[in-house]
Length: 320
Ligand code: UDP
Image (cartoon, rainbow, N blue to C red; front, side, top):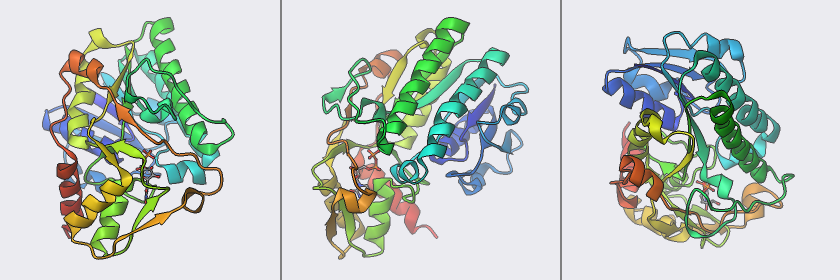
């Protein structure tokens, strides 16, 4: 089977590319290298079953040029990372809205199933312990950039769902909670690679806000096979699935664990949100998934815990 992966040179996309090639599939990667990198695909660059196309998901011709023989699409391309969204809010909005619609159109024209990656950001400030797919969204003003990302992704979900209903297409949506592992860069804000790099450099670890906010981190190697299982499970399409780990940790505790694992003597420093992100920033205080739906449907059960994740990210950063 030949798959198109938009954003296939990104962090999650490159792991998915390797996974599919390992199962003897063919992969076409469409990526504009805005946050992704060809380096992420270095291990498979010479694989004849991989084709890399540099282009944007907002460009219908670029997508069309990838579609020959494609049997299914993973749409992962998006503007990602809190820093990216705050730095380039308009570009981010365009990519996340227009890009998704353009890729959905290609899926419709070629009548192929599509998985669209969404995000736990859509739940916004809902702090329920165990967010499940039908839970309410609680988001702030659409004029605040952080929420425009959540708005765009929520609209992507609605578009994807309606393409399924109105065009009879096979579509599935996945809400990814914090996903971590080798190759994730801290440049766009993601906390674990940032903390590990700071720890290894012996610099103070930068905890934003009071550090009491809670997250759950899932290893990318647990997420990637689930993406394939959900795309292949056509009987389970037409809806949305959470994917994430439910092991809760406060950001302060995360910093302490990274300090211990890296042997850092740099300690930690608390930085107020307005200094970290600019005025008016609102953070999520608690984000914990309920993944029962994916467990019941495809047997999703992460097998790696937070220590495994921290260890893997440290090992990667220590490799020359
Ligand atoms: N964070 C932090 N220090 C950093 C980067 C992030 O304390 O150097 C915090 C951030 O404010 C948030 C949490 O870590 O509360 C997770 O941030 P990330 O951007 O990785 O993911 P998201 O906010 O989307 O959950």
